[in-house]
Length: 91
Image (cartoon, rainbow, N blue to C red; front, side, top):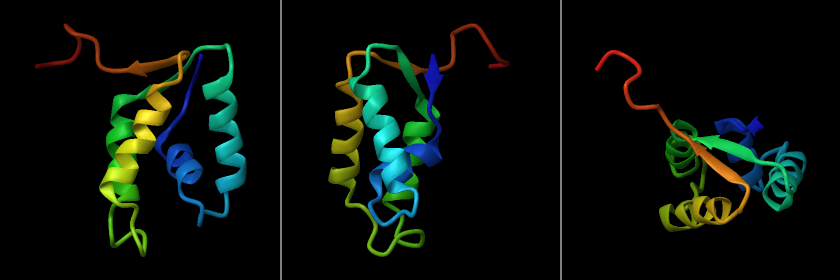
């Protein structure tokens, strides 16, 4: 299984990124493919924070559009959202 990171998500989303084309094609291939792929929940949080931050992007992605992007990724039937397993760590 391939897990994608925050940078790949941001590059695939932001058309002004110099890596947009390659990142978009990669995510599209995963989303439309038959092999399971993953996004860790922290990467979704980081994507939303980065893409919508006005000190990082001018103009930033509107929050609603960023959430719609996450929703589109989540619609992929082969996507697995990775989170922390219960009973691990020191809480």
